[in-house]
Length: 143
Image (cartoon, rainbow, N blue to C red; front, side):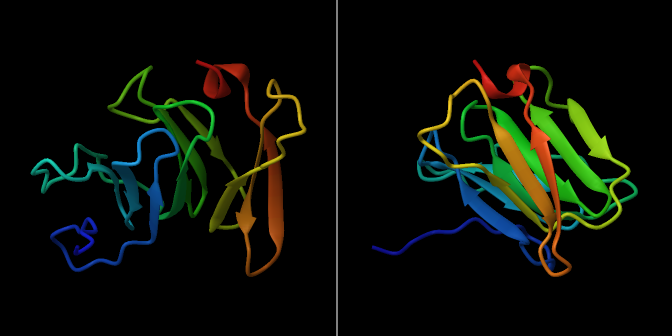
């Protein structure tokens, strides 16, 4: 069986690629000036969502929320945009900006012993070692 991976019909690289933790058929791709969500199989050849072009900063990385379906974190050269598709889909619901270095890495603490009422997001620039810790608010981690 041949694996099919999403591709944009342009000549820009895919900067990040991640499978949804809630639906194994959903994928997130990050590109310089937009991101897309894809549904694999069933004849889909285009993304089911494609963001509008990013203004003022390039996208660098991205991640699905591990606890709330419909929330996507997009790292940029000047911060993070948080998209909550349950709230709205035409723009980011929240932005963490005025960050001194480009965000090139996003990860969530994976600690099964930790209380589920507390979620921590770590992001930063892995080449310079800059790291930021963000306590995710309840509206972005709970259903």
